[in-house]
Image 1: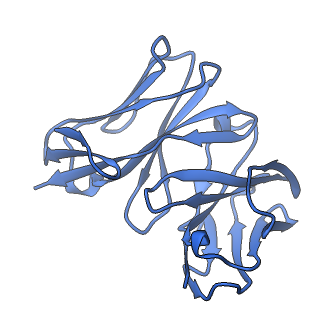
Image 2 (image 1 turned 30 degrees about the vertical axis):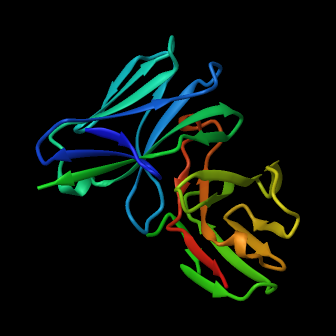
Length: 111
Length: 114
């Protein structure tokens, strides 16, 4: 389940389950959103993006949903694998080249 | 074939010292960034350069001075290091007007100030 610990919110799932990571963004004028994955000791890595004129976009095993009414973004990972264990960040483009990052969610996948 | 590279990966130094971190990107992007990631994993923009010109300078102490000799490089120099500067620093790059601003990150430099 999902919990808010002392540090990052953490989502613990079993291998093969579907994972849903949620993000609330702040700026209703943001028109572009990105999900990043950060593995331990590495930099954030682009996963998938979505523009504000869409409400859903699918990639390989990942889907991003955008609800502009409530300023909510989610990342769905199908058939989660141990290699998906990482910290996931949503980011919004709030003007010119600026990305504002959310606080991050740690995904822990157990075999 | 590394897209965004940073050196060094680890940097351990004493308070009061001056240090630099280098960043290079071979993606042909026109915009580069420095971010600071704290112990709680929060990523905060520090600087942004577009074609060697400073375009974003968040509230960062003036002990931090970015330098961009060309659009493929953005170095970060830090004077009079303090304990609170300990963090992981990430360089990133993007191409304005392409892909909505997707930024590509380097592997990070872990700075520890003793």
